[in-house]
Image (tube, rainbow, N blue to C red; front, top):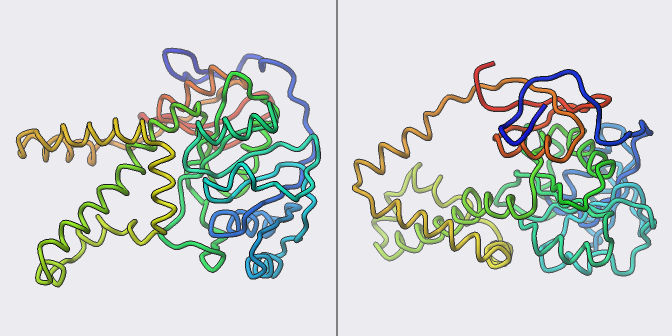
Length: 318
């Protein structure tokens, strides 16, 4: 199981409370752009009952062609796949079952959970799949988008574990691996590995432009890789970094401190991280908040639901 010292392999123990086995609930997706459309398409292709809604008629038509039932009436697990500024109002005008579990795909968790919990209480489970591309909109839908992706899923003190498991099962059904986190831990982590990289990509692109046409004409693979994410919608990037301003500023300060190191030391340190072994050790973790969070904090993820456990992995020799 997992504890404060980290996960350890186990096959005995009891869940924190009984978790009944029930048929998989339907899924309703609000927002049928790249993430929401891909999720709905993947679930529909797998035979899951899935409905959806989008304010854009073209997005609705595209989803319907992939087997998604278009409706304003949502039940089961309701997924908000809309831009961050629209999260608080995404369900306005829609009919949501009063027992539905509400989750989201937003790239920032603390402010989103604050807004949604005020409206839906303990029915909310915050989520963030770590996938997507610089493209956007329903034309960027890809049913395989989540395959092998990490899907951060928030376990707050008030999170109802059966609801968390229902959302986890949705993520697992489309090929993702679930990383249990708290909202604050998530926001600190993604500031370092997602939000700051967007700012660095913007800075790199702007600095190269300042260097003149010759520099841009000579730009090749490393420049392309370093600036790829700046093909994203600027409004999306701005909302993301401003919505997570505190952790992003702290992570950016750490990058600045690294750049102040002697360059040979910096290159050596970065190379060591990039070359770090990537082995995995399989573990079974009981259905307990502390144990699940310990798995996530150890850098692990869940890849399968068992009766009274989840099966996953942590970094280390297999």
